[in-house]
Length: 437
Image (cartoon, rainbow, N blue to C red; front, side, top):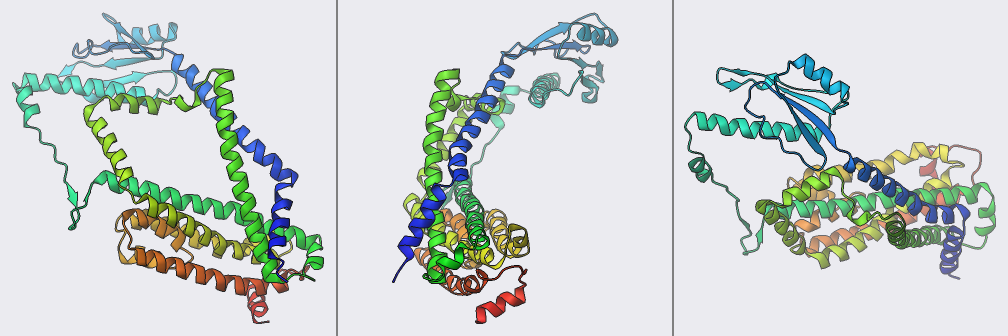
């Protein structure tokens, strides 16, 4: 009799009714939203703070370029020594003092520009000051050298190399970046899901083994059915938890926005504000349009279908390893010796995807590792945005499914023997003997 549906149902209900599972399902989004709310609140407090920067310009070249902004106010000092300026800034609790030295040989010595402060200054502030001074001094040097600024600007040439396949399909550098981000996100999501819920399957097997419940269950259920039931049931519980997280996060974000008056969706960090300011530039705006266009140029239907298939196949493959390890040991401490051979292919896949796929997505290394079942779920997902023939994707999936069936076969042999073994740490040699039984 096929008991697999009953085992899946039991495993699923056992997981979702577990107190720790319920607590973490509802507590995790709350903690996440709380952290975001705290960051948003502190960011607003920081954005309301006005920093007073005193400027002592002994060269007289840059004193007129500093304009007050929302968060920075400039105080120009004149007819004052550097020591007196330092004392004044300290007494008035100013944010800092920008000292610009005198002119040497008709050019300012950039090493003679110093910012004095009690604490380390803000990096964006220092960068803004450097840009202001560099721009102004460059302009003044060009004027002194009788360089026609308008002609100089007009002489600049910007080159954007167009990219087009022999079939006439147009692409760009932005397309490659978007493809890499999309593929990397898919591969990383699979990596994290395997780690989190694979460990959950392993702990579940260990708990039932140590409580001796497994001895009663195994008397009426085949080991293969029991192992598959645990894998599928735990996977469904993980998907349920993920869906609940998405729903709770959307609800909590709305509640926090209404109660605290903080719009988390529009919360801006200093980096985001810099991005918004940059978008005022027509060239940056054009790049943004290229990014949107590159996203819609992706083979979305192929990506979604392949993501689902490789996600399921990769997760089931690695989950069978986790279940076998859980059956072979008595506690989580003993699992460490067996975890490295499982984690290493995943880490290798991520590194190959990041450092090889971006360089040559259709090269030998990328292609070979996109067919090896232990690395193909991650590497192939990173390759597909760059255009992988359907036959390669289909072949990779078939190899992955076949590998899963083979893995289930030998993992079930370890499972069958290991779940009834107690009080002994197994070695790799003993695991091989269990497979031969």
